[in-house]
Image (cartoon, rainbow, N blue to C red; front, side):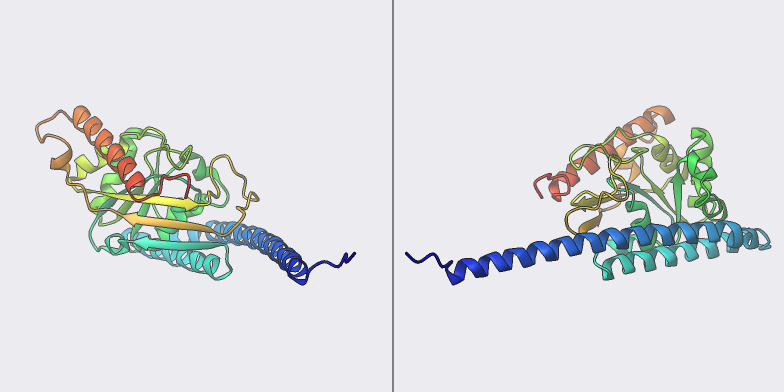
Length: 284
């Protein structure tokens, strides 16, 4: 009786072992690369806070100081996103990015599936200002950045609207994640807060909805930095057509009612388009 293993089976076994080894090597490389990226980000954040921020405070012209800091942050995140793509950690697919590079003010409202969507949107938007959690104002990696760039804290809702409106009047693009924290799932969003709606109504500018997806999920609320997905993740950004306020709420509506109406309309609009674009399809 011939007990020899057929050559085809031996070949399949060798190929399978090679693929398994390659997959493990790829995983560990992405884990190391992710750790290094977080270290670089943290070190650069501390460097910015203890060196660049004090220098920026001495800049005599506030408007040009903010613009210079904003462009510096944009360039840094643009470089970081490029490096993450080159080393095989992530892929990026963007549609409609030209709307983020407009010279005029814009109010970007986006869903928030991952920790990295802030980084990507800042990398795509040269003159950007963000609404950030109040806790980041005491973070050693962020405190200098958020102050020098004059980002807007979410600690006081009234001040958030006032500060955001000032940034829009100065020609900046405001980036807002109205869920307030990362989305619970790809097919489910947290209820939107109304701050962005009050901001848009006060400034009188359209809302620019942006869809964000990360597949497979990475850096979600339930994941740690070392929970690296089984393959490189693909981030997709889709910038939709601007929404005119007159399409969302009656011009003579009381401010509170108008803001509530705009909030619900934008939340429904983004949710609907997440499914239409396949961003909320958990089977992707």
